[in-house]
Image (cartoon, rainbow, N blue to C red):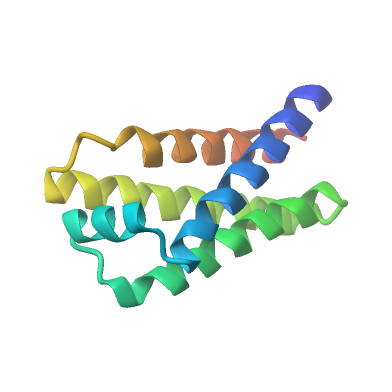
Length: 116
C-alpha cells in the first residue's frame, strides 16, 4: 500500500503542478480551451494557483502533515469535478478526458491518503 500511495501521490503532484504552468503563461491551447468551455481568461491565474496549492498540499501531506494532504486532495477532487462539469455544460467532450484523468488521480490520492 505504501508503494501505491507514494506512486499515486507523486504522480498527482507532478501532473497537477505541470498542468498549472500553462495556465500561468498562458499557453495558446489553454486560451483556446478556456474560450471553448466559457472560462474567462482573467480566471486562469487563479485556477493555476489553486492547482499549485493542491499539489503543494499533497506534497506537505507526504512530508507527514497528513490532514493537510487530505484537505489538498479534497480540494483537487472538487476542482476537477468542477472542470468536468464545465466541460459537460459547454458540451465540449473532445478533451474531457484530461480533467477526467486529473480527477481520477486526485480521487485516488484522496482515498489512499485517508486509508494511510
